[in-house]
Image: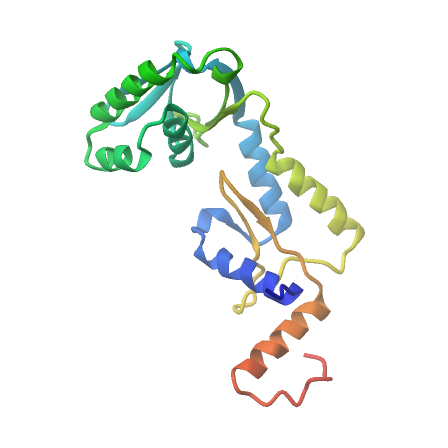
Length: 222
C-alpha cells in the first residue's frame, strides 16, 4: 500500500466525521483542555483479581477491594471478561436485555474458577478509574497488569503543542465547511492531524482532478 501524507490526512478526516460531537475539536488548545481535564479526574488503583466483586443494581458494577462501586466501560468490561475467560459478547447481550444480575453472577463464577490460577504477579492488576464531569459517578476505564506503561493523552498533546508552537506553519486541516477538523479523542484513542498549507493545497487539487474537473490550475495557487 502506498501511504502518502495526503491519504493519511484524508483518513484522519474520514474518522473525524464518524466521531460524536463531544469527541471532536476545532483547535489544539480545546483538545488539550479536554484531555488535561480528564487526566485530573482519573486515578490509578492497584488491586488483586481476587479482590474484585461484581454486583448489579440496574446496571453492572465492579467493587475493588471493598471500595466504592464503579461502572466498567465497554472496553474495560471486555478486558475483565477476557482475563477471567468469560464470553464477553454473550454477557453483553445479557446486559442489553437487562439481565445485569445474571452478568454479575457469571463473572463471579468465572472469577471463582479462574481466580485460583491468577495468584502472585499474574493476579496483580491496575485499574484506571475516571470520575464523570459532574463527579456523580466513577467509570472503570481499563484493567491492566501493574507493569503496563501508560502514556497519558495529556502528555502527548502537550508535546504536539510544543512542536506546533515552534513550527507555526502547521495546523489541523480544514473541513469542507471551512472549520478546522482532524482532532479527536475518546477514552481509548487520540488522533491529531497536523498539516501545512502547501500539503492541503495538493490534496484539494487531487480531489478536484479525481472528480472529473480539468485541473488546469495544477501550478496555480488556490
